[in-house]
Amino acid sequence: MDSLKPFDPNDIDETLTRVATYGGERYLLFPFISAVGKAPKFDSISYVIDGPSATIEDLLALSAMVRQAGENLGWFISFNTPWLIKLSDAENIKRTSQRRTPRE
Image 1 (spheres, helix red, strand yellow):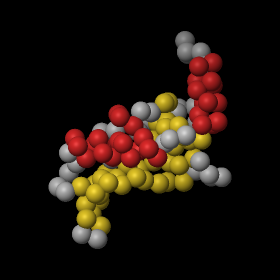
Image 2: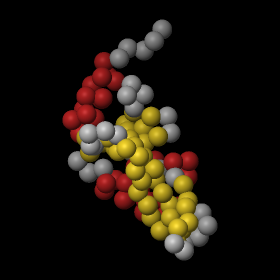
Image 3: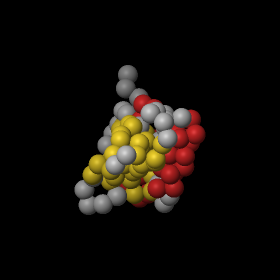
């Protein structure tokens, strides 16, 4: 978990989302790893969209849902994979990353 960095849901863009069609609806998906249980698992937050691709308004709505899902938890990102983590674990990650010294 050394590569985790704090993540702001306002930074969600098309590179972190996927569009999927299911049951006649089109969904904007935000896939992430949920590390709030006993073991990490893949999960996603979805938002129904009207067109073939996401608009800025769709991304803003999805960002609000992601922010809400992360209440009392911490959002982090490793490369291009978002993680949802318990606050106690998030504090440990922040402390560890602040103690690390840059490589020479």
